[in-house]
Length: 269
Image (cartoon, rainbow, N blue to C red; front, side, top):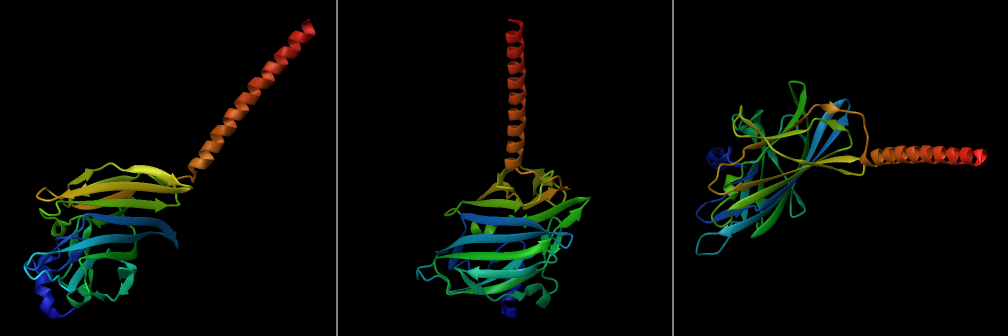
């Protein structure tokens, strides 16, 4: 990344989690859907979030030449302590740099603090490409609860031609997590509770959240997910087996009592 990009990038740093810089005269971007998967694990006594984001992006030409930009600079904020970062374009891994290390004041503000950023260059851009970003980071704790955040602001990808974008989140863990809560953060201090669905994949808990952003409407802000900790592990299959065992025991006891009664009636006869 050369310094010639820095002033333009700094103007756009707060616009979105995924900031791809384009010349607005020649092109615009849309991202009708994005898919974000988290896996919560424990390593050496610390809880970690492994994140994998999939971003199908469309490039729309706005000039008469019909030529889309072949190179797009990108910046992407990462939570403190992030490691094992991987960026791929249509399945090919890209090189990335520590943007905040080069420009120490270039930080991305979130509802739980300022994050450093990485940057890379997307080359050989077509009218549609799929960007994937993976990383893992330790979970933050606030007031005794675990917490992780994902920035939802996608204003650069919304337009009259592409007025909506839906983010699909799935959070998985083999631990039995207690007291899940999800919020969108309109500001640093205003957190709005939102609904989620809970299910199981075998013994694995799955929390699913869907958030839609719309052009010319207020954006939700950051997504924050919190939980209190681990409970006693118990999968749905074990619960079903336990209930079945109780049902069989009760039925067996009833059958035994009925047989005993019949034997008593026969003896009296």
